[in-house]
Image (tube, rainbow, N blue to C red):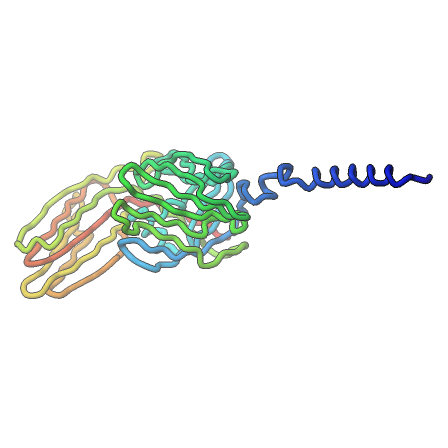
Length: 318
């Protein structure tokens, strides 16, 4: 069949038009553009460096331990270190340990899923969520390739800036600053991968006691008590986890600390003399029951911060 030049030109224009439609970005799926929610597999892992006011440059490996939580609608994000899992249970510094929904990688706060992320990402999109006992308004600042940069603000002037990269399936960075611009949490990705093997942990915590006494310069004693109740959903605690910072000045400065159970048996007894200092100490007490009495005696210029939480430990072997 012979075609004249006009017919050939018409066919080429039509083919070019069809090819352009097939290759249009408008027809790409969310996943092809890198903006859709990723799928996690059991054994996926991310190594982060964490910094908080309590400690700096601590590394932790987060691992997908299960994809069958919440009736098969959520993952369980655990941690490869039992000590780090216990630290989280009392300080609650890492909001992304525990359950994360399949549909939006939403984390849980006080039993309610929170959309820290909002898929598919699009520049200038906004939404709200609750985290760290604050209400946040989040806005997508930029989208480049598979990475979305988000900034969230709260009414008191606090701010969270984070970058989620779908090619990594999680955050590159996550930085929370208070209204004074001081870092409260800084997460920085160091490495990531698949098929983690070994035992991983999640320790569900619940606040029981929290006290801070700073450099009063006078001698005094405090005496307090608290009752250990069950976790509202998961029953009895396996243990209590405690965290403390201590610093005594020179001269006659000292601190004596005692924690006794309802039978008057001492479960913690500590004495610090002049010049003593201990930072970010983690410990545990097995099988807590009923009422506890906390006593601390201070002389001179002494500082003490202590936090105590009920804890239930879960583990998985991958």
